[in-house]
Image 1 (cartoon, one colour):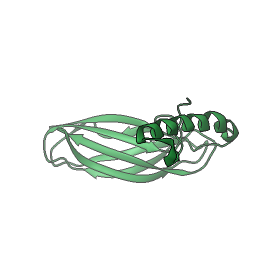
Image 2: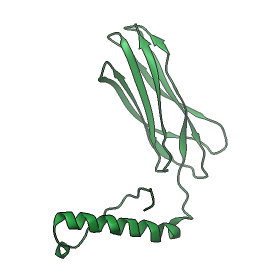
Image 3: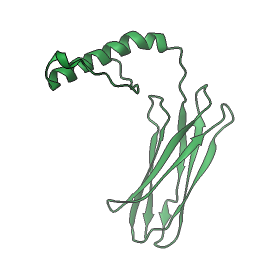
Image 4: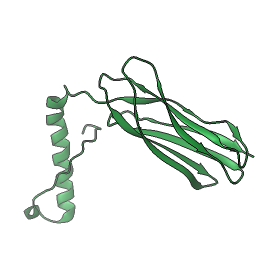
Length: 149
């Protein structure tokens, strides 16, 4: 089976048996679809936005804002936009989450997006994770850490 995700659902007919059997048939039909039909879809180009850098301070202080930005580069041949999400987790608690539409012109370097700032209220490391959901099968995710004292 090809390791590729497409936005579709495959359902077996009710006459094909139990729910377990229908799930197994759907899996087989999905694999068959991908193997046979991806060859015909191979000419399609996908948007490929990659994270060049997640920029946050290495150190911070309680009550002082930490600026957050994301540098994005289009490594493909298709113009478009995608959703980027930045999440901050401190002491096991999600303290920050923001989603933005991001884009980049082809061949013109990075585009930087400002995700605002966050002012921590307690000490402890903040682990920042940025991800871009561009539809391309490569992994577009990175992490950085800010030590808050």
